[in-house]
Length: 120
Image 1 (spheres, rainbow, N blue to C red):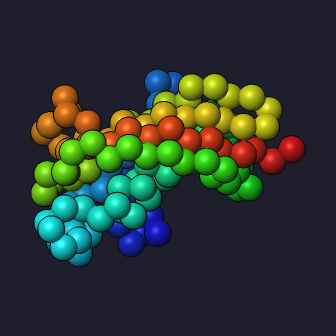
Image 2: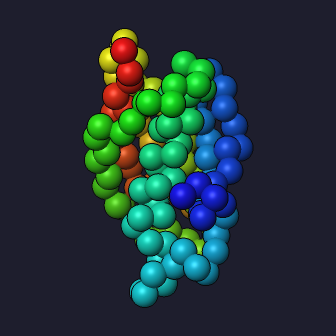
């Protein structure tokens, strides 16, 4: 799905990940806002990137929980996701993602917490 939404990783470092979905009219739902599945896909991909950025290639890491709060309608511009790891153990990574519209970084579009289950 990352290819379908043109997912980009703009930054990956010790502080976390900055991921982006370029705005596209094909991602807009009736009502003129980005679709919920697009927003959730960006958040999930950002969590996956931050986990792999910390641990290296872990193909069997899977989402075991994703909680999202949609806060405001995203603007018709690129959508950004800043992901960090809150807690990393041998069995799981608990992450947090803040999503915002490009140019409006002080206004959260959505807030996500999620957990990735890690293989033994």
